[in-house]
Image 1 (tube, rainbow, N blue to C red):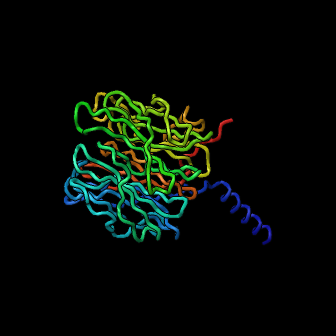
Image 2 (image 1 turned 90 degrees about the vertical axis):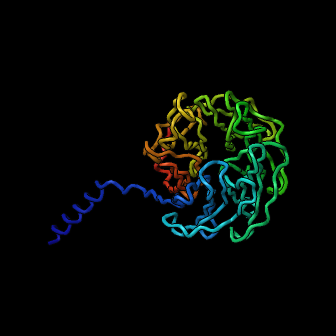
Image 3 (image 1 turned 120 degrees about the vertical axis):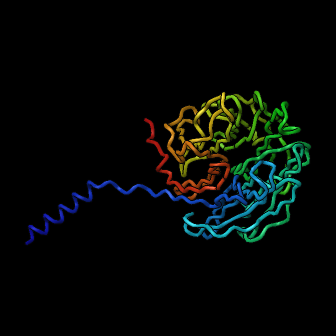
Length: 364
């Protein structure tokens, strides 16, 4: 009897030892499905609230699906890690002649949550505003305009960063008038040293060929430098560095990753010095946007962007397009929002992906 029990126990140990551990769960949901009366839900961002719940915001278009269609900023909460989301609430009604859109959220070192969004009046007038919540997104201050320079300014969703020393940086691209043959977007960075209450502008304006330097993103990297990545029309992500907290920038030049004319998002992996780039990988300079915005993938660099791992699939459907990704690190997970577009309908999608899914083995 004793021998039988030992044999049974050994069999259980062998079976357990040979079985592969379960794959980490990828949580996914459609936060805001598009409908015929609400054809576009795009440019989202997420902040983690103090109770651990998730708060998502996005641009809800109710007057069509063009960039100049009527839109407002709305939000939703999830208390189960993103598996389900509450009914949406309006955070910012449309105060522009065209719309309000393209929202960024950041929890400042002060503890406040700052919300940034664009107010669009015409092809020559798009500027950004900020609001503040001191009670964890329950209520918000009145909108305050960030900058007065004339022109059409673009700041993507999830683009404002805070440096370790507390300085806030807001990267924008601007042109005098959009949708013209001479757009020539340039990038510029706004800086705040008083927790987003007032802003100064860097004197450096970065340029790139064709339509110009567009939709910049920022990341604070080692040695006190800040990396700027830039969308272009030439089949490559371009980049620039600042060594003085965003005050001035090196001349923009091609980086190490090919991409179509589509915005990419760059973050650090959770508790790691590895870079994670979320992007569209296929380039076809003869096609619209320099290639379809599909699939959506993530690649990792262990050498500050010099080389990259094989991309891991996030969204594979070749009949759909995906772009304007936000990426928020929460514990050992990467929380993503992005649009899923099909048949001219744009839904806001969410994925919570374990960092292990992207992680690559350390090099010798």
